[in-house]
Image 1 (tube, chains in turn orange, yellow):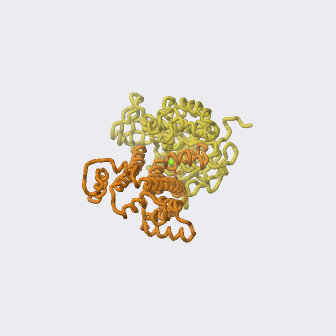
Image 2: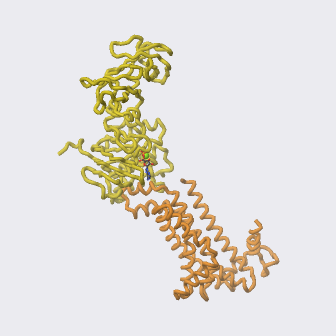
Image 3: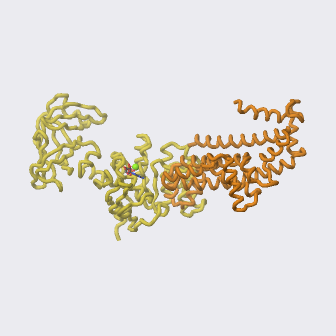
Length: 248
Length: 364
Ligand SMILES: Nc1ncnc2c1ncn2[C@@H]1O[C@H](COP(=O)(O)OP(=O)(O)O)[C@@H](O)[C@H]1O
Ligand SMILES: [Mg+2]
């Protein structure tokens, strides 16, 4: 519980009607208005829009790849390939993020890719895949293959079986995976910081940049807003997965 | 041209299916006629599902071939074979309504939704589930889900319907009702049914013909009456209905009659069968309802013994008679006939008489 204390304090002080971050002067939403209208709002609006673009694109691509991978791995092939590919796919979860970050940077430098929004998106897609894959594969494993056989028995092609039967049945896993990938991308700092290139900021890097020059109350409001988005997404993801288990 | 009812719908020839080292089907050959209610009967693990899945196209045989109305279907994947399956667990698509489930096959065959809908409704009426069209499968009882699975498989008008133990999940009363319903449905639609069950009573009730399977082989193929009254071997006699399986030695064969003796020297005469010769030690099968008890020996062959147990089983009374120095016999007497027959109390000396033709000589 003690670990959450800083979060609670930041959240409470984001409602402080004061320019100072330590003295409490009463409840106010001024720093939340400041987020949209204050002197730094332009910078943070650009950063937020970058963050959301990156998160949407990478989560979408990563979820698509994860869905296809889960279909191929869980349904096709021998059991030992299944374990091997699961290991391979979840490797990024175990490698320290800083190592991935450095490796990715070196990779982009080697192939002479200039850093910017594209490099961030590519890096995010790669490290989001395992987060999207795990809930999808878990869901997939729970789907009996008699549904697919029944569809084939009723004259569906492989493709129709996938789109009409498998995909709808996998949907709770896919939504859950998408939300996780989205949040992981939205919150990422380390890898983004390495591959972003000059001038491109996301919310986390912009916050970090601002904090280096001293903590101001508007940062607390922005952080709290980011925290809220994360909590909401993770909660939805959790309930999607759970509600569906009840249905079965 | 052959008359329609004799046309062969599914011709299985020398089918062999192996899973690794294990042989699930050993040279299975069957000719299933068009319009027939055909049952594959056998204990769990004997290969019934494997045979059905091979016909459906979910498994591929290692040897042999399957002809559907004369044409080999070896090259056709499951989604091009004009046969449909009612799966053991029904496998209704949980995200679709009952109606959408039934429409699915029609749509996959190229019908538009507008064309498929009335046909699907018709099918649901046929299984008396018209009002349930808009429910989800999760909102159905077991018996209703079963009927939806049936409607879904029948909707595309398959040439052959495969049913894998479709009634095994239902309770006894519902199962009995569904047995009659299925039989009526088969007659109405004229579609060839291949029905799988491990329940011999169910097989006897429903089938035009039955193939009894054991360990990947067909043991006997025939009408329910054939199989019940003239079992070919010990396995079939023991598996179908209750019977007295008694070891015998064959002493003499004359005029198509085999004279044998049981343990204790009791003499029994039965029809000779191919493959059983003088001097062989084999078995005979006698159904309990074809044995009679009397206080005095009748003019036919009567075997002396002692009543050792009497059990009331509702419609019948079951008596156990220990033949003098011989085997134990189970005898079933109808309750309604009791009044006319002497009651044999425990310990009573009695004579057991077999109806003529009741004893069936079996190959091992
Ligand atoms: N995919 C499979 N892999 C290995 N063995 C199998 C497979 N399918 C069935 N078998 C084996 O083949 C035998 C027959 O199975 P099955 O056809 O399902 O029997 P039944 O339906 O008569 O109970 C069983 O011993 C089963 O273990
Ligand atoms: Mg089976």
